[in-house]
Image 1 (tube, one colour):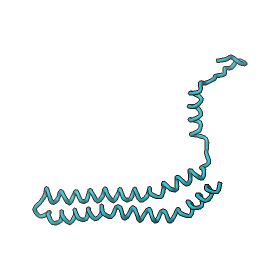
Image 2 (cartoon, rainbow, N blue to C red; image 1 turned 45 degrees about the vertical axis):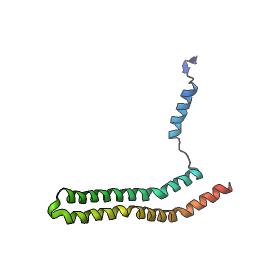
Image 3 (tube, one colour; image 1 turned 135 degrees about the horizontal axis):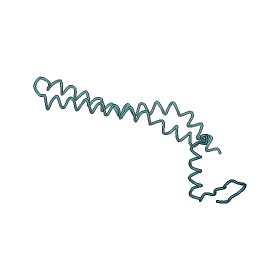
Image 4 (spheres, helix red, strand yellow; image 1 turned 90 degrees about the horizontal axis):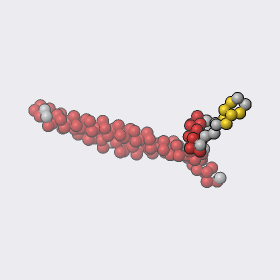
Length: 125
C-alpha cells in the first residue's frame, strides 16, 4: 500500500490479478468465433435425437415394467393384458434407436449448409 494524494493505491499479486481477470471475462461481451460456432452446431446435431431417444427408452422401460408386474404379481385375470403391455413397452424401447438415427439425419441435413460454409471459410484462412 502506498499513500498518494490522500488516497490509496493497491497492487494485487499475480494470483489475484488472474482471478480478477477471470471474473471480468465472464461479464465482457464476446463475439463467437467461427470455430466456436462450428463446434456448437456440430454438438447441436445429436442433442435433440439423444433427448428423444432417452425419453422413449425410459417410457418404454416403465411400460414394460408395468406389464411385468401385472404378469408376476397380479397373475389371474391380468396375465394376458400384462403380456400385451410388456410387449408394447419392448416395442417402444426398440423404437428409441431408429428415432435417434432419424432425428440426427434430419438435423444434419438442416445444418449441413452452414457447417460446410464455416468449414470452407476456416480451411481457406
